[in-house]
Image (cartoon, rainbow, N blue to C red; front, side, top):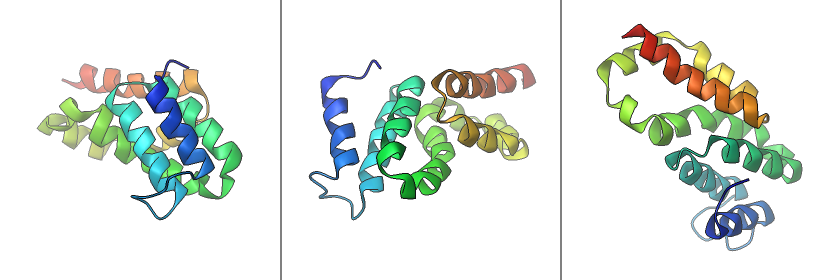
Length: 125
């Protein structure tokens, strides 16, 4: 995994539930970690972080997994998201969110899936 020391501390703090100040649940803190990774285009690291988090917090896996597509929309697809054509296309292609959710625990597949979404949109132009 290629995340920096600060990100590692935040990830393990979220996993262990240490220092919960801004959130009432550990998943809130973990979602912040995922947002930061998505903003830095660290897709593989998002997947690896989910694997680690879910191994300890299985009860949160469905909730966190449901938040992956919105996190990508706001933080990874940020530039595309301001494109009206992308907004229409992503709304029309509802399968993308299912693909993302089903691939989150496999770093190679998750990265290929997310990059494939961008590629599919690029071919639509």
